Length: 136
Image 1 (cartoon, rainbow, N blue to C red):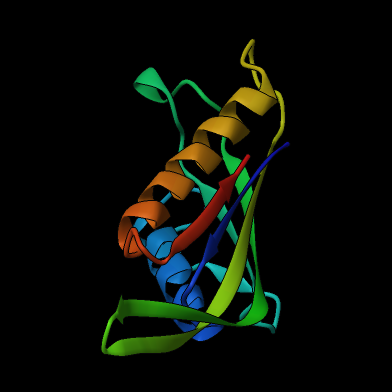
Image 2 (cartoon, rainbow, N blue to C red):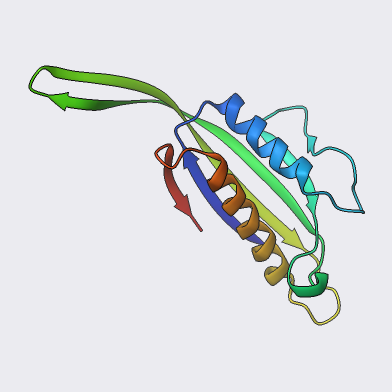
C-alpha cells in the first residue's frame, strides 16, 4: 500500500469533480466504467492502469478520500492604500493505492507508481497558488 496527500484551496465539490475526471481518464481494461463512489462523493474508488515500462506493474486499487478543512482567510494586495482579504475553502485529498503481488513485481512499487502519477496529474490541474501542501 502507498499513500500521498494533497491539500488545496478549492471547495470540496470542485476538488471531487477534478479527481473524478482524472480517474475517469485513466482507463483500465479490468474496469472500463466510471470511477465508483461509495454513495458519498468524498470517497472515490478506481482500478488504476498498469505502470512502469511495458505495463509490468500490477493493477492498483485507488481510493481517494476528500475532506473539507473549512475556510481559510488570506490577505492579498497589501499596499499603502490598504489590503484585500480572500476567503477560500480548503480540501484535503488523500490518495491510497493498494496492489497485490503478481510475478516478481513488488506490490508497493505498483501502488507507489500509480499514486505518484495521480498526484502529479492532480497537481497540474490545480492552480499552483491553490496547492497548500503535498505529503507522501
